[in-house]
Image (cartoon, rainbow, N blue to C red; front, side):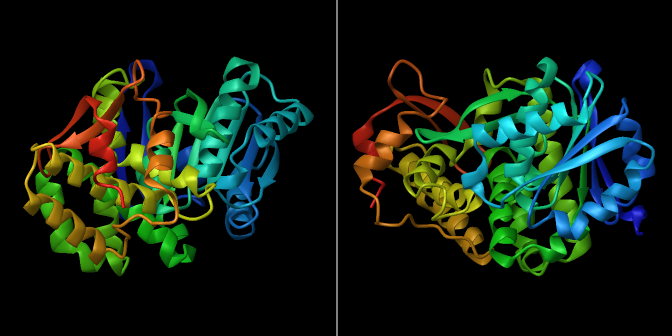
Length: 360
């Protein structure tokens, strides 16, 4: 177990602060995370793909506790209220008390669903994030956003509920399919594109090593992205201002995901395409230069990510879905755009004609 490689990122929220541990062998390193469990009841929520790989290793760290597991099918289409209800029923069957803990072992779908259920059970119990995809390690596991999808849109129901700890065991990335791994890279690029031009240049210099999953480079990339996000969350936990910047590319991306019934593209792919569309819209509005868009497209392409939306769905349908985005106010489009790499900002009152102008 190479725990000397572990990086620690702190999310500073006063009495609700927590550690994000990033490194190899962490699921088996229960001496590190067991103290985050305060009671004697634990429900492990996972899916049918991840559980056969890692649940046994996790279970060794739960010795002496009363615990059970609940599995959902793999995929975004299973992030539903119906499955939240089933998790709550599993907590009831376990006899979970107010000091119980939910452990989310899986990707973003599992983390969002399990966290939302933990926020609901007895009006809020502890949970621990154990993300097993790159996307969830660098984004959804950190910051306390939980929720489920509705037919009307992605993540429209949810709660802010911070975890007790985040255990990002990079050994789980060895079994991650190439497409899922690449999707996670989109969120790393996003953090740099929003507010860290030096990190963006570092990613350009290390793109090949990241694509090859070189361990030391990967740990550094994950830690840098998590530190950036942790700082934003500490300053704006419930997204009243700065935290909204973390949604660069998401308004376009969520609309593309919803149009495809959450089955055509992965979330990270939607974010990659959405960032490019946001950059092109910024150009159209005179906010940024084409050279910044070109650098973004080139980096995403080197990392194996898509940069163009499908022409299957009408542009008018995409705009219709964008109107439901949680950042919108008073019926106007409120988007995260940029003035070039590392300089994102919130722009209100964006004309729908300009949005249609960057959609195929």
